Length: 521
Image (tube, rainbow, N blue to C red; front, side, top):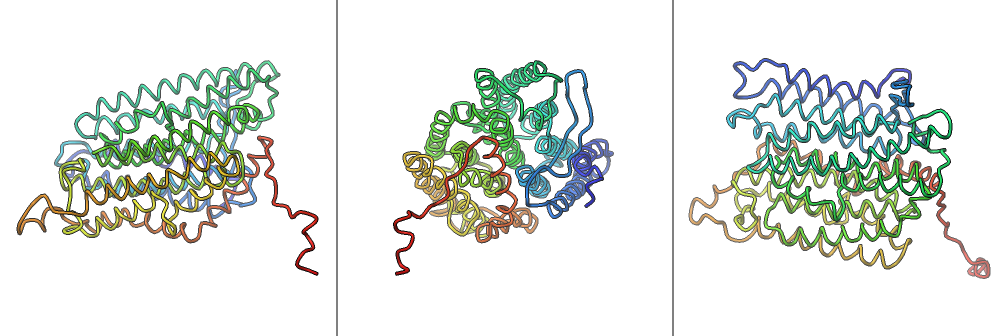
């Protein structure tokens, strides 16, 4: 693809145009089936995915920012419309553009039509959320990033409150309050950057300009805290995580996929892009505290997941533990941890999306998400049970599935940083096995709640469309589990550049001089 064309802008506009087009479609004879908005929305999402894949194939793995576009936007305070693509952005761009069509296919029969909810609105908000998320991952201007960062809340709020289960409206408000508080704190940091930039000369919000800004130690640390707290709420991390479980319990499975597997990645993305990239000294200063907070999130999230009786809530709480792993990998400040954290973002998105969707299929069939009211599902729905098991095994990091590679790298990075940090993080592997396998045992095995001849008809198995929605996720989990190099080839140069920006150099393994010649005599 020619870099002269504004491909990144086109990539943002395609789903945005799709959202508008879907919203204005006539609501006539096809309202009950909702076929037209679903087909149109799926078409726009597939075009977006195709463009993202084409950009990925044209991406130069040597690193650096590519396909960049910069236009002056608000010159009075140095704001620009600036977008660009590097290894970190490419990984999250591909994840986002893959999950949107998967969600639309998986939600084909579950939103709109007979339940009285408009498929036009659902598809439109999904595409609007995709456009905003893509813009976030491409933004190379802090002010532009802040605008689209906040813009993601609008479609997310309506998707949670307008299409979830009873109690979704309250969960949507809680979600919005937490995110707005985080956004307000981030705004303080954005204003602080303007003040520092203006005092140094011409004000600029371009990341490339701010990375070279000479900040005092106090100013850099305060700005780091503002950015980090906002991103910790978005991720989320303990103790600002309580909105997560409530939201995933009440939202539709498709909405939960977009929130946890796409929007929450904005938090960890921001920690890498802005906390490490703009405040390197403060990042090293804060590392001990952040590592401890990440370890608490890892263990606490796993313990909460073990204790919950709601399947969708359980899946949400597992992500609290997983985001702790991602943050741990970021702030141990070594190559293994940094590479593992970015790969973990991708693999967590695949595994957790599969869990949410298959769990949603089960909840829809049985009419309850309470684990205590389920059981014996594998007898009548073996395909559903099998896919849930594969997604669960990927979540707990089974070797051969994609999450294992990223989890292993983060653990290596943690042990390199401090053995005690690695030991604490390893305990989450045991806890993950408990909450995944125990939940599977209680929902899939054992006696069916319906006795007699009707037991086999309790839970209909998955349809071809439902299997087709989850199949790409399972395929990628297996492929990246055995051959993660395509992702690592993109990630590694970015991690090296980021650590160089922070001022951290990994010590290469050395052979002691007095033993170097042994074995040759």
